[in-house]
Image (tube, rainbow, N blue to C red):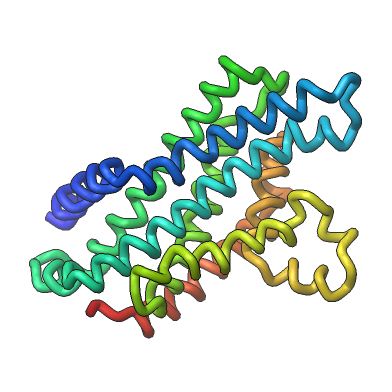
Length: 250
């Protein structure tokens, strides 16, 4: 019964998301465009390509596009929850036989499904228009991306729990999430950062997401990234616990 109710709620949420032009564009189209456009421009102009450029094109760019998928999912989640709260939809949903956990889980499942779908679209488009010349372990990378997204989405729930109105939801979500990318080790290795920024990077969830995604994309064994997975799991547990305490249904 619970699974049936979860699916009945999840499917309409997917349709609502796809009908929203900005949500679908930001979460699906933008990451794919970033992957294709930056890859073709940077990769095509570098003859011969430098070692740093090769590293970014073959590893950093797929990870960046994947992070955009996760972050756009967070911003979308924050916005939708805020709109539902303002419109009284959350109160009406809570009054149904569905459990609160089912209602919130449906939102997470929607974002995870769209994350996997967008990654698949990015890979297919990349093979057609931008052959990167690598054979990445796509299944393992998808699992790593879903783990990272699950953890990052828990931050979105915490933001959604305290954002007062939908008007500021996207602004606050973007202000919190996007700056993390610069200190996550994607563009500059964490070890090369000044001591203060190095300490900051070590407490950012995206640092561990980047390390996990880069490692798996490069073919590392999962055993080499137990610490990254554990850190992302801790972020999920802490943010979920805090969200449960401060989340407002109306």
